[in-house]
Image (cartoon, rainbow, N blue to C red; front, side, top):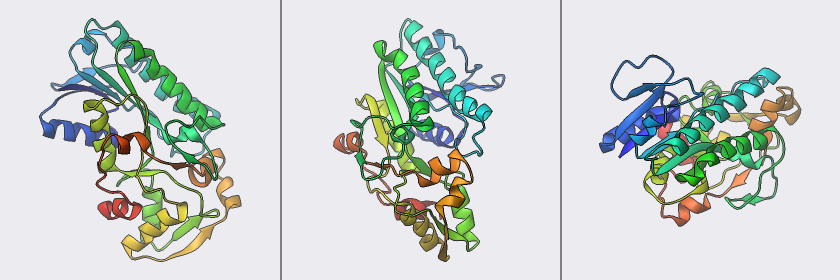
Length: 290
């Protein structure tokens, strides 16, 4: 397969490119710098020559500024939106304009689509929540859907990736220094997935048949306390502290959305399609990174 990857230099993109090349697939990386090696194509994330699409079989879009950076100032909220929507529109429009479009466009999305939904079990059939996160993800998926008439479009609604350098890194490091803590009430559900399973799931979507929204998350939902306790258990460190909700909210909307939202998602489509997780429990995912 010839696979085009946007956002190839990020955590997930780097791991995906490595796995594709290990399989023997031909990878084209979209880069912001002047192309300096075979397999690189320079672009500005605003527009892409449709002829690039004629030369590939699949497209994976992973562009987007980190939601883990706080605070979410008005300027950074715009960056979160534009860094996702503009590159996605460019990819989708290039696919539509191609003479021989690729067979699939897997576009990154997020479980933030569902927002804060205490007491609900959420799957691909559940509607969006309310607030900035769901609005951001809805705009992201709407951009990818531009290509729906020309190719199979998949919205990969990913949970937080458990990896060295991933979104849980601050929690892992604090725990390593003996500062393991719960956040808020601790019973809120945090969607999660290991990096290995994230990449495997993306490959499953590229080479499979699924379309539309697909949740990429571990099959065993975990609460915030279960996640932070898993880090403490694996690192043999205490888990004695608790950060009250009021203190988390002092971080602004980012703190509330990232740490206090309750989002219990079930990866229904992946399971029904025969996907097998290497790390089905949060403890497995944490142990994989040490």
